[in-house]
Length: 501
Image (cartoon, rainbow, N blue to C red):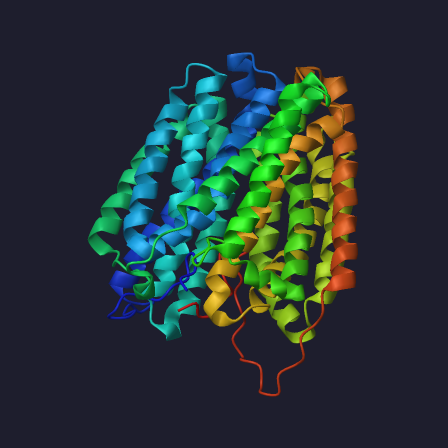
């Protein structure tokens, strides 16, 4: 069975080495392509106040600017990985980069919020096509001995990109216009395509030749998420008894149920349900959903709080979270190595509690917005919690299944995190009492932000309880542990050293 992003390499096998010029070109293309999508998703949060001001948009419209992208990305991610296995990972990656660039151009010239939302949905399609291909190309192109180094380099450079992105994006928004954060993707995409066509080898899952791709499963999960999300956003506005949100919610639930039924009976599902027979895998994904819902909901509202309430510029808001990236880069690999030695249960229990403390500290951010007394303490505690939790969480989800299914497990875990963020952005503002034009009224928004911070902290505490009750440490192997540390790539890849061929 092919796995999204993790099938067998081309017939002639992987041949690139980490130190070769050809290997570096492949890393350059895959890092830059995936960073383009991840950075854009981050920077848009900083641009929301400016977008709302230009289009006179309400909070629901700003939610849709974020959600439209995540909807199509989450709905099509597993399906896109299967496309790459079947038709060629390089081909699907390049198509995704081009699609993303054209959609970015549409975002940059949007005439109103409706056009921007539609363009963002198209952007998500492009991101879904290029995201699984990025790491799958590395897995299929590098020799086994160098694959861990290549993935580690991909992870490190992606972290650097995540740190630089908000800084550049904030500067573009402040100095010129929010539209440039989308337009800048076009020349970057052109460079990625040129390098990919010249230097990236093609690979595909040879066992998938002649087999169909699960188009039905991809369509069902996407439509189900759209219905569910639309209902959750519209219900607080129209009323929970209004026919429109009720019909949308019912349709979403039914379509997702049909998706599960279809995946159960399909011979080549985009989401192999057999993986959930592992209690450890299921528990890790439940913990992922709860924790990432808390993170995504709070981080959606934080830039608005900093800009609209605390008086930060877009640039200042963009760089305010840089310590999180620095802490993650410094400690994530060490955290993964510690979990490999003592088991993941302790860190998956303590990590969400530390994240919860950081989110609760976010509630202290008010009109003064003093960075060193209000923002920085919360950011540091929050970053430490992420560093403790993310690598063990991901490695647990991947380690709960056999190596041949690591690609599918990674894609599912990634998609669970994105779906959690999708639902959280839809639900958390209303749960905190935020709606309409409340983001334009600093006092009202600040009160809602405090409530949202405490709700998110509570979710993380719940995630800690789930991990403490359900996660089990694996039996220690008898053979000596490798001396080289394991590098984890958060939710986008298996840990280095795990082959998914």
